[in-house]
Image (cartoon, rainbow, N blue to C red; front, top):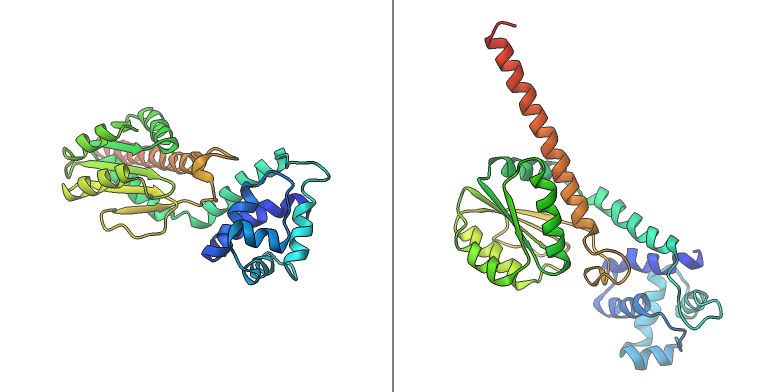
Length: 265
């Protein structure tokens, strides 16, 4: 494994780690200083066992922890901190795109676009960076005439939720899947008959969600420490946008063919 690939490799394998191993991964990903990474120091710092450190290293493809930490320390190259190179940032984006390609369900995207085309009104919600993604979704979809509003304000979400009905579509965005305001809005809207779509990195099942759009996540993605946390959501937005355009063009073509047939052309 190349030195610059160590951190991206940890991120890529993150979901396969146990909770204890994820504690180790979290520290190594977030760490930027040249510190004491010995087994003893790591045990005291993270409250993990030597066996956990060894299992972590083996999952990373190394014979043992000492071999792994030797490679990890090479990231510093005699410096006191890690400098995030452009290749590392690009690798993160590339990994997300690769995982989206694996996870994307075109049938699901088509269903959501169908709901969008039939909805009298669409309401997109999110908090923080997810709120910015909801606002961008509004900007994108408004361009093609879709009646959509967006909000990142808790009070507005709660007030609007109680006025949703069967003619509306509510899209919630939360990378962690744990934002209470977003979950409240989806639950209340669903109870009132609205269609609900949840874009999240959380695999948990939500009984009040009609379409669960699972996006790839990386540790710390929602905090935006390395790359934009909105990125995977914006990819989904672009997919919805282009699928909708394709549906619109198809409907327009069928309509014209029908008109031509009725007029005898």
